[in-house]
Length: 259
Image 1 (cartoon, rainbow, N blue to C red):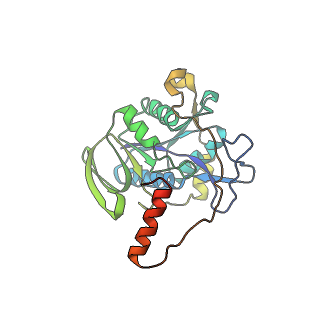
Image 2 (tube, rainbow, N blue to C red):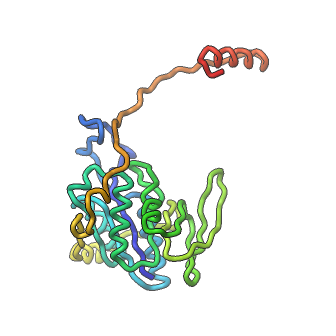
Image 3 (cartoon, rainbow, N blue to C red):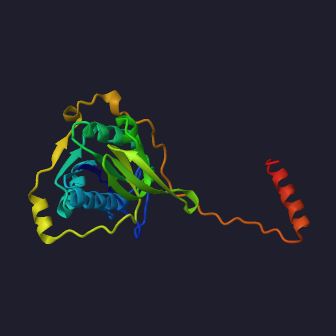
């Protein structure tokens, strides 16, 4: 089974201040540390588990500049076979469509039975790249997948729905699955694995290598402004019997133009 896995390098903002930069379209990253996106780590582990069970290969793909090779080497240290970094200076203002388009184009040049991504990136929270890839490749897909079982040429998957509901489906392969956190327990890299990964080559593909022209990857959305919301404490408590509170609430709605 040949599996492709998308990995993203994201800033760790759990214990760091997130401050917009002077452009208002990005954050100041000088004091931030970066790591592998959490959900992508689970997708990588699931790919490795499937490889160990069914054989085959795991190929990693990452969209980003040279710094993104850090997460690719991390993935190879854990057991992935090869890695490809996709980048061109023309991709600088990329949105989720650009990322999905470029990743899908790269996938078209590779043999695969399954494509795994994380369900969401912790930095932008779009949860759209996997779906975009599936749409471009014309493949069946599922999101927030919490269990995968391969049965012949199908994948039996369990996915999370709103309200705590679970859904079990069968999907024909090849397919794109966006993996939920908690689907497994990601492994740690061994010292030997880290040494081997450091010596492995990483293929880099740009627009020419992917045979992409400008209209193929131009962003469909534009970030206008990134800012920290103003924190305001403004609440009015209504007291009295239910009928009195209802009358007060109706009056407020009318004054605000809601009714």
